[in-house]
Image 1 (cartoon, rainbow, N blue to C red):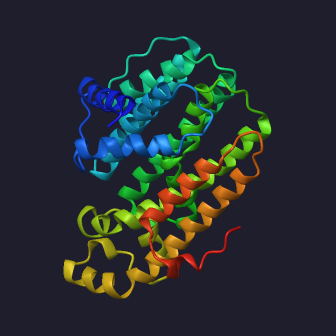
Image 2 (cartoon, one colour):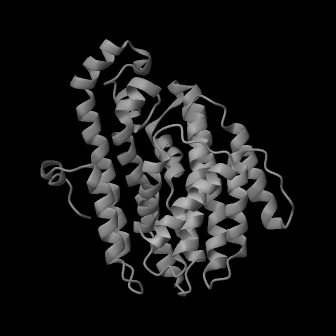
Length: 311
């Protein structure tokens, strides 16, 4: 573990202790290095303050963890989202805020850092940061709705809203605030288009990876089950069936649905790479390789890969 990783690991654990954040799924000693490696790999190549960049992404990750664990655990995430909205609406106006939840406290520290950025791209990064956080709040609000009212879930709205909970454009906003290299608006636009598609690719990827636990244990909807219900391949009450019935469905129907969702992930992966290749003022080759590794690492197999044509 290098010095930067050691520092970030300690920073993450200190934040969790200071803001009373607990990891409800998994071991933080195992997850922390993965989180750091993941965000470092998907950082645009021209970032000059890597330590500050990754500290902010850790704060962003912990905020999402707070909200996601609350909603997935059957809790009411609305108070966390309202606390977050209070922070992002008041701090930019110079008003004092006193968050009442771990999510609000973490977001306050992140917003304070975003507001203090003085790099040449910081103004653009800040403006889009607040826009993208609002989108993510909306995404979590949608997840709260379909968690309570599963019959309202629709794949087009899932992609419109729920995928925003993994919106990597927020990471791009942080990148813009932590690089000294001036980027043209064309380059920023292409990065934003690319990172939008990346978020969708990672959302679908994540739904495949976590499907079994959500299906059998958490009884949570994701794109796999929504696709099955919309195409009448799964009954609307599939998550409430007996375990033996679920096992039968899991063997006979779910493999087809998983393949379909994998294909969606890979199509968005290809669109991500296509947008990056249009950027000329930054060498994005290392970022392209990292994205392909992150997506394909979860989906090995040449047979499936051959079904996908690079755009």
